[in-house]
Length: 89
Image (cartoon, rainbow, N blue to C red):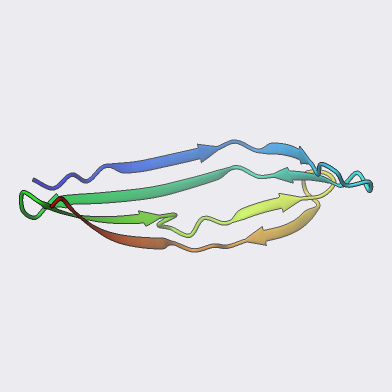
């Protein structure tokens, strides 16, 4: 029987100072809400097929410098998909 757990990840806004950078640059990263899904199906006694989707809705990561509201970058990674086949012999 296939298993299909859906995963929701939330990361609250956070502050990060660049380590080893003498300029003292600061970065604030906005919150992110990411949805993922995984499907795993046992095809035979020895074979299992798995499909995984990450960041299904293409949630971007937004950084601000040096204070919230001062947009630095908006990174859009888009969704990623993986397919795997595992066998036991």
